[in-house]
Image (cartoon, helix red, strand yellow):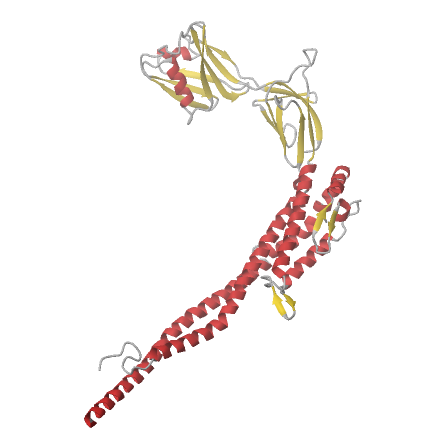
Amino acid sequence: MGSITSAGVGSGLPLEDLIKASLDAKKAQFEKQVVTREANLNTSLSGVGKLKSAIDTFNTSLQKLAKPTDFAGRKVTISQDTTNPVLSMTATDTASQGKYDIQVDQLAKGTKLTSQAGTFSSPKDVIATADGKLTFTDGDKSFEVDVKAGDTLEQLRKRINAKSDSNFGVSANIITSNGQSQLVLESSVTGSSGNLQISASTPELQKFDRSSPSSSFDRENGVDAKVTIDGVEVTNSSNTFDNVIQDLKFTVLRVSDKESDGVTAKKTRVTVEDNIDKAKENINNFVKAYNDLQTTMDDLGKRPVIVGGNRTGDPGELAGDPTLFAIRNTLFKELSSETGSGAIKSLFDIGIKMDKDGKLSVDSTKLDDKLKSDFNGVSALFSGSDGLAKRIDPQMKEYTKSAGLLAQRQDGINTQLKDIAQKRTDFNAYMVTYEEGLRKKYASLDVMIAKMNSSSNALAGMLM
């Protein structure tokens, strides 16, 4: 008798249904053990991730309050016509407060070479009858321009300006007037030490080389920028002055206008002061980040409401988790504590209140008043050696840092999820063996019943 490939074919019994029922029962028993556990772990993992993200955002707002320089930084105000400014200035957060009177006496310029009148009559003048090369040098910078036989003055101008890959900053222009054209070359290497030079490889190009007797170019030397700061004259090779005033960087844009006498240069007043707007922004961002963290913890920790014996609503992903209580307790303790010995000792003193739900609100008018009347006191409240940011930040980082409390929670949950995944792999392998055993068992039964049916049918035929 051939082998039976489908249980019950020989006997006519529903053995496939019996096998399927046995397999389904085994799977249901296993899934009942792990599915709920796996779902709970994934829910907790998601909740821990959301909590960590909210704390990270809160920590970012804290870090902007932790250092006096980050808390507010410096604001630069320049009294000048904004449509035609004399200078621009930036300040680092460590710049000293102060007021400065600056006059711009001279802008820095690079060397200028101009062809003499009569040298060229038109941009179409041919400058070379044979191939050659012009080398432009200024200090330790240099580049070359090839000149081809038959090149015109206009083609040379284009070649110079097109050497963007190596051109250190020489610009070429042609001025045409009264039947004459003049080539003007200007170097971007500014300052009195600038020295634009041109050397030629052929005799007919010597007119571009000022060191040659046949040169036909006039020269204007580069000059330094010159400013006067509170009566002190300062020069610089470029138009950008960096750290001439400690931690300030400014760029002069034009020479100062003259007073009504036509002689005295007008002074531009620059004021460097605490950036109250930035401080207020950082405080408001801190309050928002704190409230967002509280809202996140409310959502993660909420419990279902029982009404009339029926549960309504789903629990939060970290409902009943003691971590939420620990964080709330830490924050409440620190935010409600007083610090320092000055007039400003608490958040309440600068117009920040906490409601019954633990959320903060800002009285903008009071905060503005305190920032203007006692800026250092407000700064110390957050960024002082025992300020709020200095106290809270390290405690919150214990939760979010690498190998911190929340990272350990995530690692623990992931380990359990991996264990469940391995159990499922092992169970699937077991089910293959289990099904094979069932099929062997029912195959034997199928063959036996098939033989019995065959014998019974044969006997019945003999008796007929």
